[in-house]
Image (cartoon, rainbow, N blue to C red):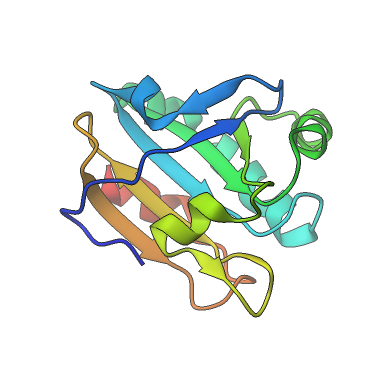
Length: 148
């Protein structure tokens, strides 16, 4: 997994609306990347719904949150609509898991990323990292709030 102090690998991925989003879009702002395994799985539903409750705290701390999974942009749009969340979801779809691999969050044996959190400062340097023990363990929102 990427480590604190490392330069965050650049990326350009389509969001839920098909618009390309790049790490450089967040220059000068803090970014929290939430790597999650798969849209529409019960645990991922719970995770993004729980994180919705801390959105105001993230905004106050100047942190933008994005989710990244191996699902397509089309799946992410439907997933956002179902959960009624505003978090941008980025499709690490093709080549599958390329960004998750660059950050060390991809699980080859599972074919998707682990539940991992990466906080990046406005200069593109990793401030904080959390990796769940397994894909079924949700990092609690309180853990994010302690890190910001």
